[in-house]
Length: 562
Image: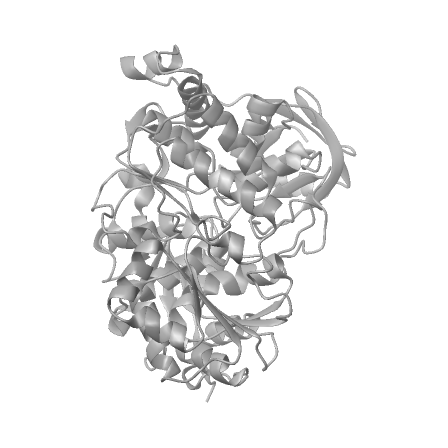
């Protein structure tokens, strides 16, 4: 195998059976942090265990929270023996880096070319030595990445030298390590941050946050906080077990003590003060990142959990990825045969399918301008795209602010036909006709979505459990205009602070076996996170299911082959 080589990203030695896939995997919502089993029901590795395996895939995809799941697996001795990627990957790599740097339980991460990936994926097991990957008749040298000179300012060096305390020094060390891995030659100032690693899905998030808090971490820029795992003010009366509620509250409180704003929303773009065009920010949470870049024209890579805090503490980020003009260009075109009579369910469907068609490249979507998508439509599309693609943004021709300059004549053109949309719809609608639970607010519902649900219920009482999650600011607006009272009178439970990716029993009704949602994101993640069947529908479909406890299995007329 002359000429083959691997590049070292995170150091270490390991040995284990090969577990390979040509499809990226989101560890958040895709891997159980307790058992290390793949729970993403749509993934080719579903049911396999990653613990102790040499896990190979082109790159990861989906949620920024994958780094936290990876750290938790490492802390519990359930991590993969090693990770091998054939493309750039930051999220799981950061989890491995933090595991080694802070907790002495790291493991090797390597990057190889596609031809080397193909050869190694054929092996039943692999051994990683200091400078060699060894398989059955295959030996691949491991080399260090090409050294990149990282130009630091006097301020950066002062932080590294300990001027602002040990937490800031540690944060800057991690940022510099990531910057060199990404090939960045300098850091950039950021104006605001958004913290994603505040969901108590596993102990690692709490362990990391309290360690940084104990070290004296304080954010230097305005920093919002993602949805958390409990209704912060009301969980005591909601039947949440005290040990879980207290741990989730401690996690949220740690970030507030570090100076973060208690916004507790996964849709920070719905806050009053949202990023401006070309504003340099540092957000984690996949849907928020994609919306910020694509719809607002702000600039932020999909920062992994934990790196988000490091950047907020220093106010500095690696100048790489979509901070740079050239990295924001589309790499392919998706020509979409969009039904002109579609309802709001088309937007999560298109986002989900666009991610599948462009799993690792920024796409330019054509064929949607005539549908005149509003901000809620784009919100649904971006959130669904973020579950199936690793790309940090997309462009929509004639709609998003950078679309006019995003493409070129030589881009690959990938068609998305009405048949493709129909197949994706069927994939996301495998549940039964009867529904026990309606899930609205993944990401957090906007005021318009609250009003849509209230109007669609038409004054009727719900018979299926119906839960809407939203940020505190949106709930306050809904209270002021009477929408909240209308929803509550209908029997809808409106909950702040947590969202569907963090709801567990007993807030999630224990006896509910089937779910309907208007969210492509939750339709994808929900089966793995909840263990229930989940169906996708429009807001009208969800309202019908809420009132009647069932919703027709018919394919929508706008998707009908005839």
